[in-house]
Amino acid sequence: MKKMWNSFKIAFSMYSRLPVPGSDWTRENMSYAMIFFPWIGAVIGIVTYGIFCLREWCAAWGTGVSEFTFTALMVAAPVWITGGIHMDGFLDTQDALGSCQTKERRLKILKDPHAGAFAILSCALYFLCYAGIYASLTMDSVRVAALGFLLSRSLSGLSVVTFPQARGSGLASTFAENAEKRTVRAVLVCYVLIFGAAMVFAGKGAGGAAVLAACAVFFCYYRMAVKNFGGITGDLAGYFLQMCEIWMAAAAVGWDIAEKNIL
Image (cartoon, rainbow, N blue to C red):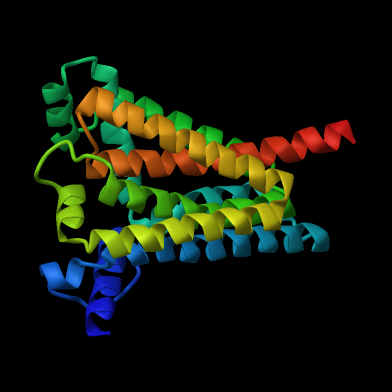
């Protein structure tokens, strides 16, 4: 029980800004950390859903607060809660991919702390697209998007303990080496099935579209990582998570819009 509690603390202290007690980063304490990684998505999902409900309440009562204010809050919430660790990986990956260099050079760019032009442009476009998608959320699609934060982290964690590593050092490699892989894989696969089913149940067609989008992004992520980097790193896992979340939200919103136009 103590080992699980320490793994919980390590997962939340590493992948979120939520206040948790400290824990020593030993192999034993890190062995089940990936199991608790998706739980951070539950916090983000609850906050996102709460902001959406507040937006609907304010609109119904005519408070005068702009709907865009709540859209911006929903877009910003994951960054606030995580501290931007996954967005950092997304930006580093965009710089590496945009460089069109060799695998070795791309891996060096991932470790470069400076942001390049591709990172800055990608950041602006990402949040602009995210805001546009979230502005069109409905009650069905916001439930799907909220659950998507759990699915994306389950898939990201699964990639860390399953996909080949691009190098023998780094955050992803550390978690992969110290994980009880058989147990962690089994739990994460169960998470994927449970959260995927929950998304379909919550959003029906919108949920199904989001799950299919997540699977497609997961497949493309594997091919991209192996082809361009020889495997995954912590930055690439963060890149996948950000891409997975925006494509799931886009698929859910797109399905809702198409369904309403058809009907």
